[in-house]
Image 1 (cartoon, helix red, strand yellow):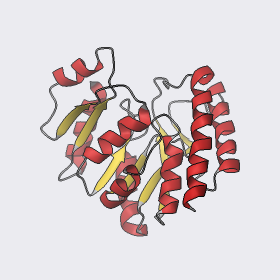
Image 2 (cartoon, one colour):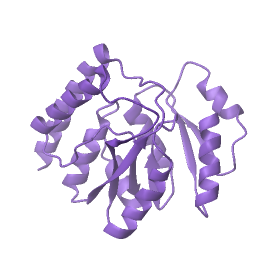
Image 3 (cartoon, one colour):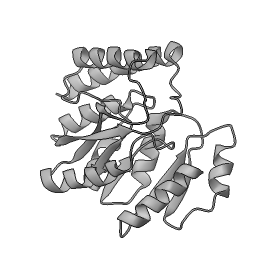
Image 4 (tube, one colour):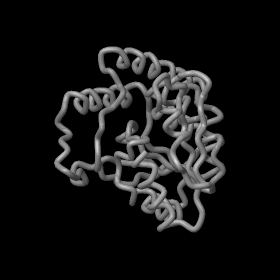
Length: 221
């Protein structure tokens, strides 16, 4: 896959050691065969979930099987500038954070991508619902770039219960319950191949998950 090749070149140029875990969430197309057939470096690992459970479950599977001092997750199409990895590590080092969350900034959108779309409008509505239901400080819970120290990754993801797209929100509620420090890092949208979220179907599941997350957060407080 071209994105994996780009990531390999970037990591080899910028890090003395690294590991990339590619997770296939029990896909029924040829994704798994394509990942396995690619000639990947030794420090790339491909993992496959036995069944499709959702993005949250796939990220949890990958994070808990990683071994790094810092653990990141992002989408396979690498929608954000790769410099975000370096920027996040600098934030860890300078600010003593446990979690670094990507923050999409209108001023950092490249290649003419517009934020004024139906999907982004729906995202803003979702964010407003999150603010009303759950007390978390992040202003961009759904950005698909997040980083964790190894300890924070284990502590958060062993408690994560949300399998679908609202799992990002639960990351913040768990981090808050554990007293972990969350910092932001601006990220630049550099490509967009299309989200797999289907607004007509998945919005219902996301709202259901939000209410369950809010309930769990209140029980733990």
